[in-house]
Image 1 (cartoon, rainbow, N blue to C red):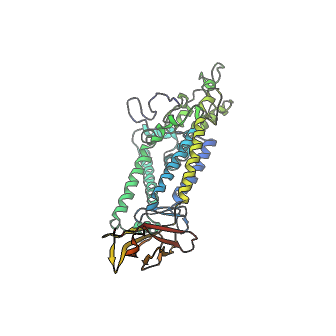
Image 2 (image 1 turned 120 degrees about the vertical axis):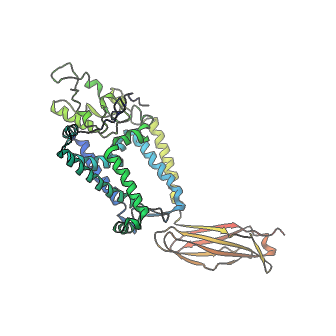
Image 3 (image 1 turned 45 degrees about the horizontal axis):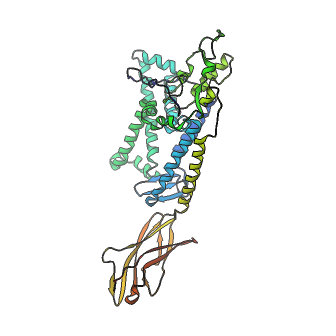
Length: 456
């Protein structure tokens, strides 16, 4: 278990007041990599509802009709149990990544980081200038320059927020419906309009003001960091042996750290990485780029702040494969096997044989009759034709009004089925079976229910 420092969160002062963080601009290999990833991820987040695979959006969760489309696969509400494997699988991957490379998800791919650093802070820098300019202007009395820049920044924030809210809603409302609603009056679609306004309000509050407080206060992932990492996890750390004591370059008794605070002012959560691993650190690596830049300027090797394990930073032996990782690998293989079996067992249509309401059986012309109904659901992406056939045993007589049924994608239908057995043979019949086959499929399903008859 990693021991974090006991200092208070850096974005909150000792008196509990908010310390609004204005990170300085930084350049370097990790900053460039993050910028590239942000562009790719924003493009993916925005494009998923618009790109069509198999005639449907790549990701579309149609809650109104309980239909779900994920990368060419079609699901309905009866497949909801598969969400367990999706959620636990994503959580498991996140746990493994954290165990190996710390909070790499937070620094590079979390939507909170991607949109805050990739969109909103870029707009802020573009309108209000670099860190020192922003701090100087904020501390100055209200004037025309301050007002118009703040006004333009927040107008742009609101415009971007409205776009993002509509994109987010398009994950749940089809694109044609979304376009139609946008072109119409809000009074014609009050529910959708209310959701867009609610999403916009939350996004604007979060990205324009709350910012890093979401990661520090609300996100539970950061608080789980201490139990997910150990001394061999790759984290962003400060080489204390090399850097201390801090001081001027000209003094040969000082370490490599010249105490310029450059690693502090570029941090989006305002922490000092030299104080050790902290709950506020989101693993963005801005401090690495900032320190490397300073080291190059003073002619010293890069890597005073770097990706390394705590053992590595302390000059001790490092291990990549350790019991924790072997356990994760074993659990991952078990989970992957179970999930594969579960997904492969999923049929592209659902058939259930049910008993109709009322008496369990009727006597009719010396025969025992069971009244049943077949509930058939087409989970394919296209219209499908199903054939229904009774499996007759020992005098069973089937009456099926529709032995061939055509169903559109994700549509269902209930087909009545009547089974008659001579009363003398009824005691020998224990179950009723139907054979269901989808057109173009080589496999078939057998559905069954118990046959009910009088005891005598």
